[in-house]
Length: 186
Ligand SMILES: *[C@@H]1O[C@H](CO)[C@@H](O)[C@H](O)[C@H]1NC(C)=O
Ligand SMILES: *[C@@H]1O[C@H](CO)[C@@H](O)[C@H](O)[C@H]1NC(C)=O
Image (cartoon, rainbow, N blue to C red):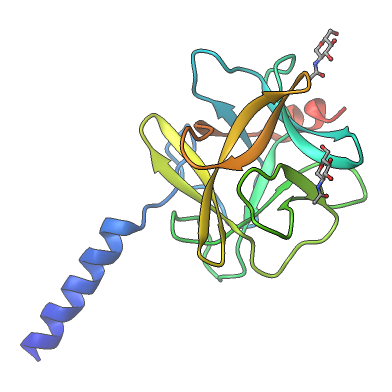
């Protein structure tokens, strides 16, 4: 009895040590499959907001330095848990009035170096995790055994989101109010 209680304590401790609840800028837990949140860059060089963009032959995610907040996103996991934690695999999609899903998606093959594009389909289980780092959060992409960070790289005149190891895009999560979210949608 005592042993199993100890074991349980250990498991809970280990869980707490590796999993943390993701908080918005007001200190409130970020909701699973609810709300709309801006990912605000934490950087001396980067500012602006994320938005969908049609570049070349694909719809992709960029940081637009002309915008204050950009277009908000929603995180979702099929787990029946109301809030997001750093161990949950997530879908990320833009929250807009458009009649199509704008789901973040990385190409089907070796994910490192691939841009974060947009898809109309919401997979059952998403490939992303939001993880705490110094100064804020980063997004990591998990596919099979390959883990890569979502990073921002300036290429072809745009700040694009792509997968790379190291130097992640660091951001804080700011809850969008209904009116600010509507205004941000172009
Ligand atoms: C992703 O979008 C880029 C354009 O920004 C495009 O060149 C590329 O083919 C797209 N990749 C996939 C897998 O759709
Ligand atoms: C920002 O605004 C400038 C000037 O209007 C424009 O040339 C540029 O393409 C805009 N940037 C983006 C990412 O839309």
